[in-house]
Image (cartoon, rainbow, N blue to C red):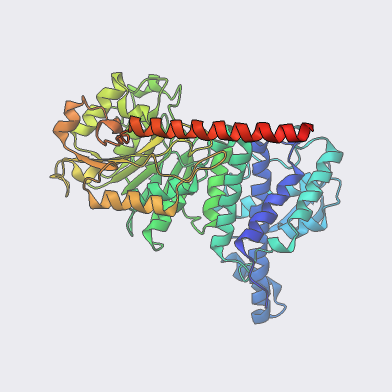
Length: 518
């Protein structure tokens, strides 16, 4: 019986494998090589585990075993190395990690890895089409000249042969692999800073957004700026069972590929993740109209410049009828899309935003006012600063509820809950974090829907209107702490006493120095 592998052992072994590229390849690039190899190793181990199990059942009937395996979640086909001139097959082998490991000393190992990736993708088109198109293990530009490239790839294949990275289902759970994937993504963000942070939302922030969105069984859940899909996965976990449908859109090709692999590793390979620009050419449409969702969540790029404002006036989906946001700040463009993609009179939206969204005027102020007048805004939650690798500024979460609009189940609810959670966090050297307790407190406060001294305030529509629809949280939640009154006389007495003691100490020191001089 094989011993179970601990999560931390897999995490550490996978992170150690990154040493092959560290200092040579930009972290924003080598994440792709590591994560793709982790993916290939995992599906190879799953295939191997199932193959051995079926051998006990079917004996040496290899053809029958392969047919059985191909009815599983994925297919590992045979890969072929062909002569470039004649087209004749020079080598034929199973498209898996172990075949590559056996050939790790080959002069064309980069080419062989690419062949395996192409074969896996071709055999699993419905789930993995296009996932490996942006990764090239035979690239001189990214991995160096042939000799150095071969040495690095050989080392990488050997690193993934460590016992700690034996990821057969009999030794690890599906969650462990998915968690390792998330762990590596988080570490890459910390290692690469802003460059890699664009595709990742800190895990605890994702958990909080998912809980505030409150998805239910049977819901269609969408993230229109999904990055590597961590927030979608957290929203799925909140449902509590497998009765949901996941959808996402991502504009960066390599990040879209990470999202597809991440979904596969979490057993959500039926999720529909589209590679497109959400604001200018959304791909989640049906019958030439935006698809509608029960829950829409996102952590879109903050204040995105050149987001497509010039095309928004003639938007075929009429998403910007409340107004077109400034061309240099796409925050309200994403929010407008999310509101329009949520089911009328039912959908719920939770979005992470920079604080400027709460109070900036002009077009943004007019859009904000219209959404409040439509009674869509449900809650405003202020979070601490320095939670994100991409910025140290504090952020907020806006929750919109379309069941509050006219005809919805909660149309009589007119107030908006403001929560100031900005002072409660776990301080870190480079980045702060939320704890489980912080998340529980925020969610419980929103559920209770009432004032909490110096923490939350339930504001009426008239109150918000009186503030010119400015949502700046300090206008609603008073966190002012009165300073303790200082007793001047007592302080002066303490100073006098300290000065007296200082004179005595100096006299003793002078006496000691005289003794030393003798």
